[in-house]
Image (cartoon, rainbow, N blue to C red; front, side):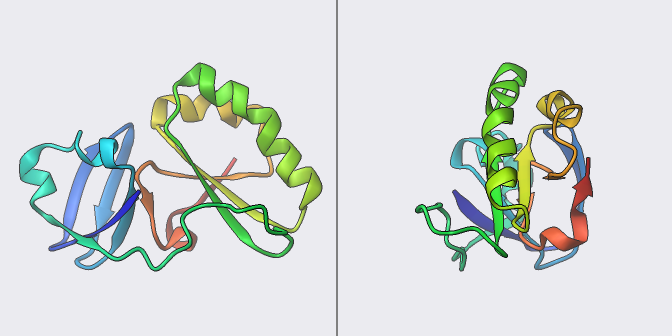
Length: 133
């Protein structure tokens, strides 16, 4: 996972989402997802230090925010639904965001009503872009 900031204002379509970024706004990309951007668009981003703990290590999630980056196809998204519901059951006051591709997002929408979605790649400032299912 890597964080990239926009070198300039950007407006583009990618992975089933419309993005509109101001200069300096950041996105969290999986390495292979960033590589799918056209080279001319990749050049408009600058790699940053994440400043985020990138991996869950078993800590209590009560009152915390968890971002699940799901590089998933539709079947993968359906298979992870029970695990996401269990996280919400165990930690009802955890803010849970799922960053998933536009096509797979539809498969989660019907079964996960208390979880917020985020585009994939995910904006670092989730509160500005979040969508509740």
